[in-house]
Every structure is written in C-alpha cells, then in structure tokens.
Amino acid sequence: MKPHFKTFISFLLVILSFVRNILAISESFTEELLIKPLPTGHVYSFFQFTTKWDVDPEETKLRHYNLFPRSIGEIIQKHSLRELHLSLTQSLWRTQKWGYPVRHAGPGAEVFATFYPQLSNDEIDTAWIGLVNSLSGLFCSSFNFVTLTNTIQPLWTFSPEGLNLGGTNASHQRYANLPREIVCTENLTPWKKLLPCESHSGLGELLNAKNLYGSNYHSLALDLRPICRDKICQETSLELKLSLSLISEPTVLHGNTYHGINADWSFKSIYGAHLFSSCPRAQVSKVYIDITSNLTSSIHWKLRPDPTSIFINQRGGSTTHLASYDLNAVPSLPINVQASYTKKLTYGNVPSPLIHATRFVGGHGQAKGKLVTRIHNNYFSNDIDIVFLELVPWYCRVFLHTLAFSNSKNKPVGIDIPQKLYFRPGLDRQRPHHLELRLTLPADSVTEIEWEFQKGFLKWTEYPPDAHRGFDLGPAVISALLPVARNWTGIPRHVSTFDQSWNVSQSGYFVRVHTETLVVAMATPDFSMPYNVICLACTVVALAFGPLYNLTTKRLVVKEATGAGGGGGFISKLKSLLGKKTTSPAEETENKEEDSRSKKDN
Image (tube, rainbow, N blue to C red; front, side, top):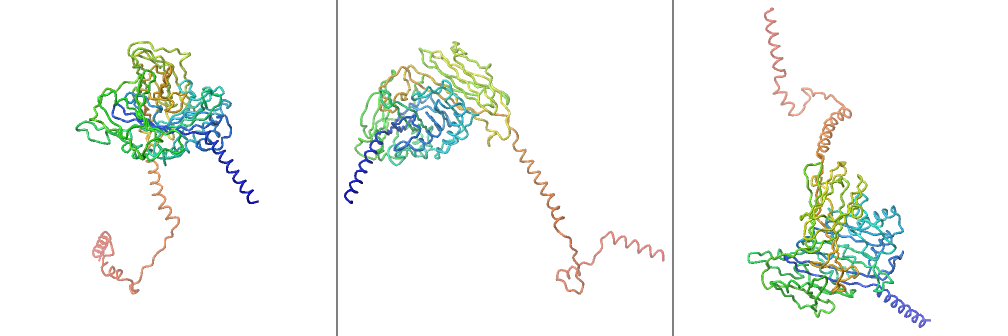
C-alpha cells in the first residue's frame, strides 16, 4: 500500500501544480512609473499598478484569488458593482502650469460607480449606500459621509470607461464628492496592501509616506472596469488599476537660490528610498522618464545610470522622447536614478494647455451670492465642445433663470437648452442641485458661466465643528475631447498600460478638468450662547442645592458649654481670662444711663 500511496500523493501534487499554473496564467500584474520634469521646476511622478483577471465580470461568485485583491472582489459581489472609480486627493492640480495629468482627480474624495442594469432605482440607492460604507472601512476614509443628499446621477460628464455590458445608462450611475476630505497615511497603508507585493518589493518600495505627504500634490486612485480580453473581444476580463500621482519640488529640497535654482533630483531625494528589486509577480516592471525638455530646452540634464532604452512617442501631433528602465533587465540593484543639471535652472515660459478653468464665489452679504466659472479655450483655430458639470449642495438654493453666459470676444456660446442643458433642482435635506451643460467654446477666448444662489438656514445640529470657517462646495468638472495631444500624458481607454499606449494616435484626446473647491460663508448662530446658559444654570443650581441639602440632611445639635471648674482646654481658659468685656458698647451705654437715673431718683 505504501508505494501506491506515494504514487497517489505525487499525482495530486502534479494536478495541483497544473491547476495553479492555469490560475496564474488567468491573472497578470504590471507595475509602471512615469516621471516627467515640468517647466516650473517640479517633477511629476505617476505610479500605476495594473492587475488583469481573465474572469467574466458577470460572474456572480468570484473565487480562486491569486493576484486580484479579495477585498475588492467581495465588494463587487456584495453590491452588484460593474465599475468603480475613486480618488483621495490633497491639494489642487494646477492645469495651467503643469499640463494634464495621466489620471484626473478633484480635490478631496471623489467616487463614481456603475451598477448592474437589472437593479431598480431603489436597489441601486441601497447598493450605493452600502458601497460607500464598505469603501470607508476599506480605505479608512470618510466615504460614509456620502449620502443621497450629496449624490447625483451624472448624465454626460461621467460615463462607463470599460465595456458597456447590458445597456447601462445614467440611471445606473452614481457620483459624489467630499471636498473637505483630508488624505493621510491611514489611507495610504490599506491602499498599498491591495498590491500583490505591497511595499516589500518592486515600485511599492518607493511609496514612502513621509516623502509623499510632504509634496505639493498627491492623489491616490482606484479604477475598476470590465475590458476586452483580446483584440477580438469575444471574452471579457476585469481590470483593476491602482495609481498614485505626485508633484514634488526638488528646488525647495535644495534650498539655495542665491546663484540660481538647483533642480537636481533622484529616487532618494524625491521618494526617500532606493529601488532594491522588482516585484517578482509582475510581468512588466518599468520606469519611464520624459526627457523631451532635455532635448528641446537650453538647460540640459543627465541621467545616471544610463537607461535601458530611449524611444520616441508620437501621437496627436505631439512628439515626446522617453528613457526606459526595465527593472527585470537592470544589471545591478539597488538602483537610484539621478538627474543632474549642467547649470542652474531658470524658469521659462510654460506652454499653455488648450483648456483650463478657474472658479470663484461672487456677491456680498450673508443672504445671496453667485457662482462664477471662467473657462479658457487657448486653441487658436477651432472651437471646442465641452460638458460642464456643477454639483451644488441643497443649502445653496440656485436659480436657473439667473444662468448667464458671456465671452471675452463677444462671440455667442453655442447652447441649445432642450438638448444641451440638464438641470435637476435640489430638495432641502434630500438631494443636491445638479446642472450639466453641453457648450461650444469659441476659439481663443474666455467663456464665463455664472448663476446666483440664496443661502439657506440650517439647523444648529447641521453645522460642522468649525462653522465660522464656512461650507465647502465641490469643484466644477469640465470634460472635453481635444483635437491635439498638447500637454496630454493620458492613456487611451482601449489600452491598459503605458507600454501599450506609446505611438497610439486617436481621433480625439479626452481630458477632464476640475476647478477649485469653494468656501461659502453661511449665516452662523452664536454657539457660545448655549455654553453661557449652561454655565449660568449650573451655577444657580449649585448655589441653591448646597444650602437645601444641608438643611434637609443635617441636624442642629446644641453644644453645652464647659463649666469653670471643668477643666477645659488651654485656649478656653485663656479666653476666660482675656474675655473681660462680655457686653457690647451699646449695652454698656444703656447700663450707664440706667445707673445715672437711679442715682437721681435716690
């Protein structure tokens, strides 16, 4: 029996290894890092970790997790989720100075989800509330503050980025933002745990919290969508992207600006660590550095060590030169990529992006105000079509009849109200105001959109702890399809990684611009008055309670005086000797008057 038993065990091991290989083939993982020095002296870093799982997204029960994080799979099944896009961002991406990012995100927390089309509207609302609570626990964030009072169903701005399976429409989508969300290490730690190698090896080693959160801008993001498994697209897969955007300023790290600006940077100075290894579970592990400015400007810098390869990326009339480091082919590790400038950096002209915007609050007083958004179209030859989205909280009661458009060149702004304007007014404590516009921006002009609002009165329990600071309004979102790829560093939607996106041209290049968040001062009650009333009431009660308590709980007992011969204490004897005057001055006067009267009578 013994030889047969050994044969049986060997056979089982072979079968298990075969099954494991099949499962391993069905999943793939890619890690990439794009570094782009900016004309302002900043350095833009974009980490992207892509996991592809060859499983049917319509599968009701996902199992056999290998590279795909189990926690995300359980959320997909629990809440009937088809697509998920969320971001946790600190600071504002400055499009006018930095160009367009790879992944667009607004300040604070932002979440957008698409659900299965077979769900009813009430079921989607229930699944949405459950989803944001699950995300809140998973990422240690405040997504649980997302309710139906700050949620909308976007019509044109946000659409499914993956395969539209089963005819999904706007009624199956939900979007919300939390502009006051603060991002910290509590969010980064669970985000890193979703990576197959976490921060133990690969590009995850560079995710040092101390350096990340000391930067000018940082954004954590998660994107989940169904994609085609191959070019034929007869089968589908699940794609999970974990990305991190970072803007560092090496010139501040060096500090000396007396003789020019030192803009040298390295892995150690920006991320606080060397790269010791690649992730053993990654099929592709590469670092890309945009060296276009090194070839086109008068200020040159040198990379050390030498890159694995240098290639040209051409798309949309724009040409970029890239240096590539293949971590699986690097001869020696650890590696610390360094960029050394031949002379001190001097700031030059920043090439203006085609579309950028700014937003502010107008008006005066505590009762009314207006929201003003200025959108710049810097394309000199053609008009550009955009979609404008504004989500206004219910306590800012906007008036649609005050919506007005103006243009710097007095050109008409193309808008057809029935087909290109969607407005859903808000209800107090039930839903926000939702406005979406489809506009045509005239070429080389500035278009201004403004409308008025009235500030509502809140209950005293609805104010935040720092009520006098004001209330935050989320950013306006502008979506556009650019005709050229100037300042565009994104990835086309039909591909997943940077490695697949080089030299891929399109008919248009999608961008999404987020404006600033706004702070609106509301009518705020005097919160010190309840404190004063409480203090006064407690003082009165304390003063009244003491005597009443003593009168009702204590007994008055008469203490008998000790006799003269009774001894007593030394103090009592001293008092008896010194206490000669036992009567008051008034009594003595009366006694003297009585004595004098008695003498006269005698």
